Image 1 (cartoon, helix red, strand yellow):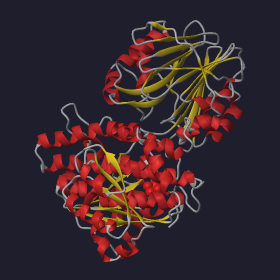
Image 2 (cartoon, helix red, strand yellow; image 1 turned 135 degrees about the vertical axis):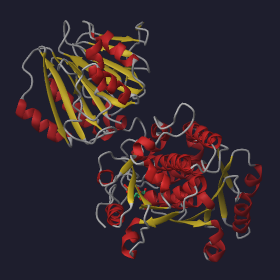
Image 3 (cartoon, protein in one colour; image 1 turned 90 degrees about the horizontal axis):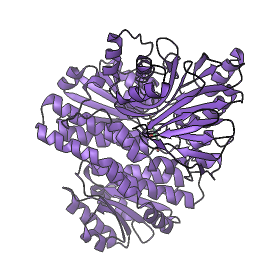
Image 4 (spheres, helix red, strand yellow; image 1 turned 45 degrees about the vertical axis):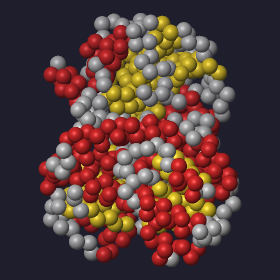
Length: 612
Ligand code: F6R
């Protein structure tokens, strides 16, 4: 997730670009930059940090004095290359004639980079994007659009790009899309490009959304959209009726709801580039030292809150697939118990932000005791990433809602991939079994989408439960951490008291609470412990408790016992935690929003807990 803007017209171009970037800052905010072509002269200004710092730099440089002005801008959410001024977009070719801002991932960039270096191109950054201006440079023969088309034909991956050049017979922006969104805004004597509508709303409401494979050539008085064969597409402009605030949330009432709905895309991005053509896992290059992982005798995972729940699911995944013993610790407890770090041990820190003080401290403690450190992290270049030997990025994109949603399901996906990679390295599973798991993972985004398509049914279910004051969440095995995660989601955003328990623990205390005022959410997918969980459902029912079940599609038995049943697609038991999370997120969301809670910013909570 990054934000892109482009402008061509008579306004003060840097002002329009900075204004657009500020409106897109929610898409990424570790560095930013603009490239402006002023009467054929390129000027590039970039900065690490927030847009305000870029604005100040621009003020000092006063970059334009020509008449028709053209420029592109970018706010970055780092994926390849740490956040730094050098790695900030727009990126340029060797000659300084071509500038590209990019949102997405060029999966074959290493191959292209080596090829281009062999042809004499000099690279300045660690980014995947930089291959694009060099490719355009190598194909340019007087026609920018053609050079961009040929460059993109070499690229594997996803992109929304804007390109400007000091070459050619007049200023123009070439924009192209394959995956990440791009929208062209039509003005009078001026035109705009952006990754998202909020950047355009102060200037125009007439827009054309580019489709995958399309390219737009934008000048101050025309917009031509062509498909991948170069054929002209006559697409009438649409009129946007959203407010700027609605547009940032793409029409969703809250960031949390938007982020819940982003999960098919987010999980796809976690998987992207990590699965080989023969359905095996290709994480080794990211693990830097796969031999260490192949030889580890013990593994420890630390995290806090939702990330701790991911760790608990990770234990099941890694132990069952790679057969290595895994110990889980709440990071805040870890270092105060003088933990034993055995030789040849690996510690994994799971943290969305990469800035959680307790998780960082636990990782430091383990490092001092000699562990190899791996972090599973969403924010590139964060503290956790910097202090680790290797990082597995989740690529969920910025998570704005304080309650973690897409960060969690992408952590589970990354852990699943890691467990499979460990199984491959350690030879604990035959290749055909690994391939079966990989194929299952490929199906997960569509399965999540199937659940999201039932959003309204969960909203109605939530409406019936918004006035209760206590909830119990029960599950067994790999779904037990999901019961705790479901309870955490409900309590943190709706302020309703909720507890997650291992279903087998119920008879050891919590059963005393059950009566007709106590809804019990039971996760009961059809797996090895299904019968045992059904026993718990009976126990709740005979005490007049209300059972809301999350069950496997086609399970008629449970719908006769539970008061309400929500079905998830029939999947492998190891996939179920990802799927059963989704209805629990939506359930908590709808209850909290009906109660009028500030869903995106629950009281007393912060997105990154940077103090102990
Ligand atoms: C709950 C939530 C928190 C975080 C926790 C750790 O919805 O978001 O429990 O999971 O504060 O944060 P990270 O993952 O950034 O280390």
